[in-house]
Length: 401
Image (tube, rainbow, N blue to C red; front, side, top):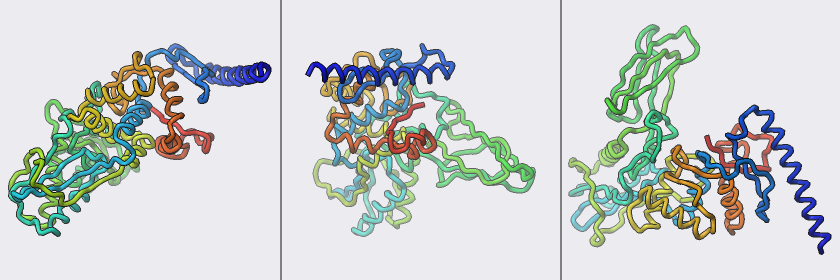
């Protein structure tokens, strides 16, 4: 028995030595100061360290944080959880739209809800209300960069999530040396300072879009030259306003007679019944988070899990407490980490490489690990669409920038 153990240990150290030599060779070829790099490689069944470099050094995890926050949220909400947007009618002939911040909710879903109301002969509601009480009104995470407010991968997130909280901008050339046409689809009240010139002699567009949110959040400065129609997606600066406009359109399109404003009010606990429901499964949201690294989905999932865990309002504080409770139950120390959002966008997040490998080893022992693993992109998918293709069929990974 002692000989077998000795042989296994010898094999382990031989394999470890090969890994260490390979990693060291790679690091040396990068010409990067090793003090800026943190690496932790551990054997998954035993937890033995295969390779370590500054593995306990605090680092900014970026989107790799989504591995941890989404796992905690999934554990809290359960595999059967659905994001639902529910339309209720009261005996007083009022309509209530109970919101969950569904990151997959689209204008077409609002059209469906209103068509169901019309089909049930609800054509002249007395009042229409939003129940937006599940979340707080904080629409960006702590430490998010204000100068990234036009970054389509970092839209505001709220209980009023709709159409990914993005506006579609089209810049179309006109006559040569004349200003371009700029439109937004669908309608949203925004003003363009149009400094884009049509130049049909060039083959490529050169267009920049800027906004000074502190001075004029509804004015976009668009400049440059355009040769062919260009398409941009930019974040909505007022999610509630955008949601309200799309709902009002759906009401008109379904010929429901309602001309008042839509206000906020909590859904009554009695004398109401469900008219219709839009829902999206948590599995689809998890895939969007891990395969595509979608920040809106990550933040919304983290926030709604915090709301359920605390049986209170969805906010960053409750979500972090939910995460810490999950790590405590998992037996993973979180003394050396700091988490302030669900997506990893904030530079205030801090993890260590050792924490991450400890988490992955814990997760690998979960009975649903194989399902979790398939949610991660393989080379050729999601964030690995054009990366690490030589590892296809041998790798699942979460990237961060």
